[in-house]
Image (cartoon, rainbow over all chains, first blue to last red):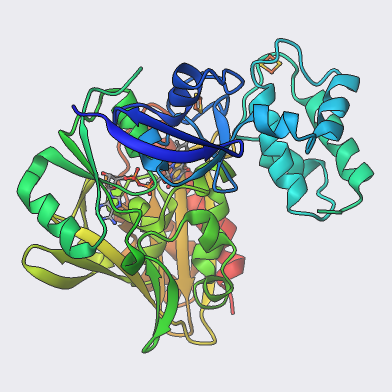
Length: 159
Length: 274
Ligand SMILES: Cc1cc2nc3c(=O)[nH]c(=O)nc-3n(C[C@H](O)[C@H](O)[C@H](O)COP(=O)(O)OP(=O)(O)OC[C@H]3O[C@@H](n4cnc5c(N)ncnc54)[C@H](O)[C@@H]3O)c2cc1C
Ligand code: FES
Ligand code: FES
């Protein structure tokens, strides 16, 4: 099948590439752009390891096709790390041991940031619900919830 | 796994979509949110020759009140619907059901129309549409038509949609003031498809009960509806034995599902009381 030309921005930089329609967004980011911070787990939407942002919304990188992202604004863990936008969240994860192998962490951080960015002061139940689509096979989640809760308190409901 | 190769076209108008679908027949598949289709592609359980991407069609967006019904465009994302004031006000049953669909990242992308078109027997929205007595607007090669929810869900993943048809919107009659709504489901984990679920509404005169996860389509329990309309919950629960005959599946036996259905009816009964 013929490749399609797409232009989009990835972490603020303009990108032009030719992609096969069957290329998923997460494979495009990892294989074609070398952005390996987004991980690949189940490839059917269940684990959340591939979490990225498309036009501001957190989505599954394995369930969006790269060819669908022509004209889109894509952000990955590399982008939000470099900009410092989630430095407090990353510090809280480190301080509370909210990561062990780190496989789930990029997705977990982006999911958590979406909840934090909505403002307000979500409690532990709400935090758990929001990360329910992101699997962690190491930590048992408790430390992750602790870390997110600490940032909720520290940001004090600011968006 | 990775999908097999396929071709891709992002259509710019509804007319273009209908032409592309007519040209490729059963070889083509519409992609909306992709949250059910892409897993099937990745697992190679579906391998269409071409995907027709409808995401650019403005005609399929938007939520509006039109002549006594609430019209929800097929491309309205489930997350957008969750935040909609109109849906909360005029279709509270749908507002209750939405948070049960998958996870927030799935709902950010998944569409209302995709869920209705797929018609997973354990999905929330098809049951809501049925309970609310809604309608489906369809555009196809032979023009536009409207199908009532009661006639839309035919069999397992089979609906009134033919291969060349595009689901445009759903319509929900704006409820009377004394209408009450109840929604509940039982799943092993938050975000999983339900083992059994119930979407229901009731006013002074009548009740509509749509069960899901207990058959090959969402199912109305008409004997139980009649009993409930008379005000007898116990009788409604008892006659579910005749309304439903759930098959066994990998989660549970049919007998367990029937038990769960009865539990759900008792659980939401207070919500349906005036
Ligand atoms: C991990 C996970 C958990 C999930 N949990 C749930 C859940 O609990 N409950 C639930 O209901 N769903 C669940 N889903 C599915 C999700 O809700 C999907 O978004 C929805 O079923 C399909 O919508 P879509 O827009 O993504 O459709 P797509 O995946 O794009 O399409 C689905 C099917 O419908 C057809 N189609 C789509 N739009 C149209 C249209 N306008 N006209 C004609 N045909 C069309 C497509 O050709 C395809 O066959 C889950 C998905 C995942 C990955
Ligand atoms: S790899 Fe995308 S959700 Fe698991
Ligand atoms: S830290 Fe290993 S999967 Fe979460």
